[in-house]
Image (cartoon, rainbow, N blue to C red):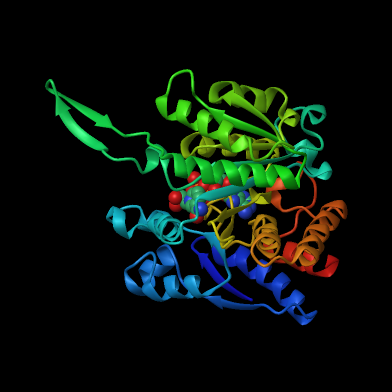
Length: 353
Ligand code: NAD
């Protein structure tokens, strides 16, 4: 089983090195995996003036899954749009049709104090948000700027075809079937035609899943309910823009952006796995970054693309163990408590494994 390893920029290489240690340990124990590294993002630009070099794309295509670090950095901010690091990631998603973004928001009991909400509201939180990733207002045409009645005007188009809605909603139902069989579809059907269609299609797909309880919620209410009573949710499915915002909100419920993995899957189950955070240039190269989101992304990769449930659970159990043992990087430590660096956290996971 081949894994393409795209570490990227900023803290990307540091956190990836820890995940690779974990994968190497699993290989020594007999798991048949091979990894191949390639540059992406700013590193791709530095190597060959392209955020997604041809060779990187072919390594990604030939692999069974991609483990991705993070891309971006201030040194690339003034490049023309097509050369910018995030284009590497956006093009990978498009090229490989990675339309389903799975973002778990799990609060480990040991980290309850890191949440901005009261422990009793978030303790035991375990929700999964499915965000559509390749359509909606982020890609709809026409878009642009023009002059209207003597003033500047900007415009974008929210657009979904029913086939795009059907496949992500179906992925939502499939995910709900593996969990507690509750699915909440989030839209803005009181205002948007796109959302009226979304709701219609969701209800049609529901007929194939009689065991799953489907509910609908307007996005403004969902944003409120996520901070009022987040544990009412199990699986949420929604469009690209609403999902972008709600999944960031949900991640903050858990306290640290450095803890959360994600998966972006296509119809064949091929996926790109990455921490939800960016390249954190403010702490890059200082052994400060939390590697756990990347290590947990590797666990998701083992589960969803390589079908190695036992190995995935081994990694997740090791992460729970180091948290229980009290290991904390600075982002998840209580004030005044001892912290460890990126590398030491990786070593601790390895020892727990
Ligand atoms: P960011 O997620 O990189 O950082 C936000 C804050 O969280 C920073 O203070 C950072 O130090 C902290 N943080 C992030 N990851 C951490 C970790 N693992 N451990 C400890 N602390 C961590 O977001 P940003 O600052 O808005 O963006 C920085 C760069 O990353 C930009 O160039 C942006 O475009 C890029 N970015 C990339 C991705 C991606 O590759 N998928 C996602 C978001 C942002």
